Length: 436
Ligand SMILES: [Fe+2]
Image (tube, rainbow, N blue to C red; front, side, top):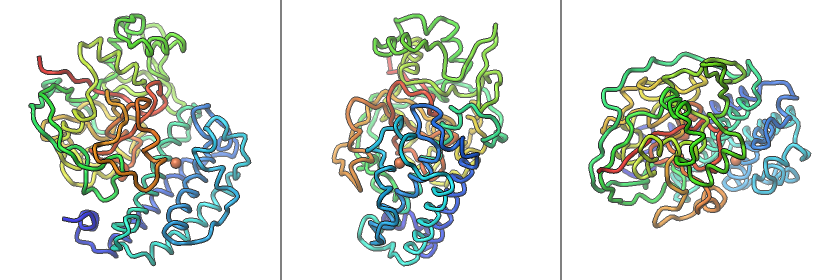
């Protein structure tokens, strides 16, 4: 099966164009919903870690213009004077509020103008062309995933703002007790990364064979209840569990629980999109840094899995359950913001991998022990600033997507990365341990 067949299914090029158009409409609806707020909310910087929401909004349109209109459509720049404002490498996030950004109304008008022309390009383009940007609609997959990734960033900004009433909530399936808390993965070779997923990023390629000794991995992500044991056991006050840099970071910042948690007597509360509520014990813990995850694992007598161990536990499929598209709140995973939180442990038995490992996709991004590094034979495509400039020993890899991640922007080979101190992202973890 070629790349193109993989994405086309039996639909043929017209079917693919229809699917792309539908996905473009859906992602834009999402971006507009997250920015359906008063102008003050959109132009204000809610945290130095984040851009103002109006920056993200115009940036996704500008990215779409650069790649679809200029690169593929050969269309002249619509607003060349604004390019530098929305180049993520020209201005750090903390400086973005002082830039002469497009206002909310102007930003909406700009991105809708871009989008109209993008649909014209989609209509004209040959998706079977050998050029890798056109082939299989890669460039559209690029901008779709990019916009969904910014939508998740916007959710993190909305959470940081602590303003109530801006984010939709919903129902999730109930949890289930686990029979065995850990799963054994036998020693052997597996294929990591992909050559065949049509819209995979350069950093997921190429597929390569890796041998791993046998190991144990947690069946489910670490829950709030389990994490609370670490907190109550004085885990944040004992340097034995921490890497020196992590200890120093926690001391300097007075970190003693996950972000958004506060203690009131014997009860732990959290703020979730402006509402205060008791910390639910069965939910995977989120808003912990890599340092906290690493310290918890050491306290528990375990360690974080490497990203290879995480990916092998998925069983060599596009999703742990197979090839079926996850949808939003389907049978398999909590993705695409059906509710504004992770689902309780055990909520998706049908989403288990062939090894029986659960909730690998959706709920919370999972920190791994691995630095973000290129795979052997990595080739940069289509530009260096997506992955290449981030490789090295600065960023830790996260896997699996969160409840806020759209189904189109995650799969078992998908790699995310961030600084080990970051906590505003929807990240938790699971533990692993080597065979005795
Ligand atoms: Fe971006």
